[in-house]
Amino acid sequence: ALLAYVQLQTSPWLVVPRWRISGLDPERTYTVTHLPLGRTGGIGHTQPEWMTTPLTCTGRELAVVGLQPPSLWPESGMLVHVTS
Image (cartoon, rainbow, N blue to C red; front, side, top):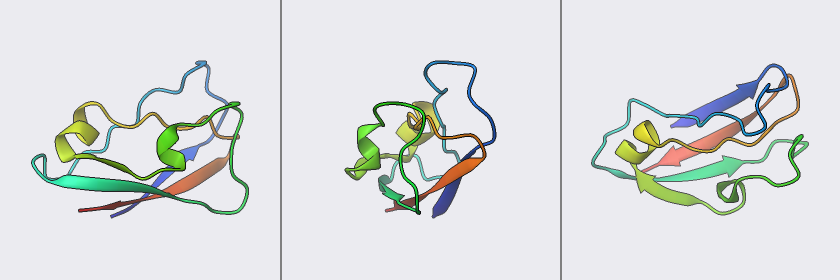
């Protein structure tokens, strides 16, 4: 699956709320890979580790725990590739 995460405005929170991804098989294992597009990074000084190293987890973990998204610049987004 190819997913888009978009941030329209600056988050009012220091840490952006987790991005829960539903609709995946809860028992299957998935690899989550960030697909860089142009300008990388964002407002935060550090970004989640899964932005540079693919993350492996179950569909249940993605739906319940989710991913810690990066703090992006307003009106920007990113693509994430999820494979099983």
